[in-house]
Length: 333
Image (cartoon, one colour):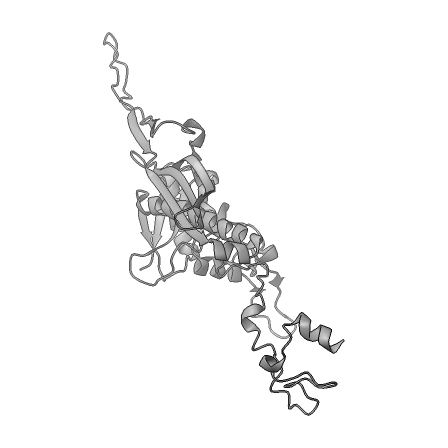
């Protein structure tokens, strides 16, 4: 049997540490300290590293501004680069009818507002074969989702930029605080510009929203009568607070002065003078047209031995304030 074993591995064991001795193999004796054992450190390069399901290294902002726009997307799907939106001005020329005199006709002209589909944004990544083969497939699905979110956030950012010229501004009394007096002035300005409060919405930064949330739990409370048994000069105690026309149930501020409240982390809260920290706007103050919604495409590159992934979107935004005030920018003092 010994000779057969030697034959099977080349017939000579001297090159492997000497002749084979019964019951012992050189380098693996029972008295070994263990330093000769091939362990995890030695095999580190041979042990595969596995990817678990990915988590995002960021928190997605609440994308809300697209919802306040007049959406003209259906008019440009697959064709066209401009939407002509006629704005009808207020008709003037009201006058008394004089007996025997002819009627005078007004000559107001429509204003042609052009919404240009001129924004084409993209995010691109390339994954080499080594990474694609070794990584979990779901990892790339999450990566594609992160790319798509980046484009969706850009649309909200561009809409926010359009809100920075609504036609009128109001300076707050305190940085990042809309007090009751500030809010009353806002409502008065809306009404002075013939804006229907029921068709308007607040859009505020996170600090203002948190301030309203904290104050909203303080409601108009009870009338505590004085104890006249001890004093006849005491007045009744009325515990008063702020009523937002809705409770802060579930950690939300549903409305303020009857108008819905939205908040976005895209609105800054820096304390600099003149910084926009909130808006009160009419729904439809910005027009939006998305010719091609967010899409993700991929192809294989032989040149790089890699998979190319591109996410893109085509759209346009425009504020509708040519001849009228459509909202108020609220600025830090």
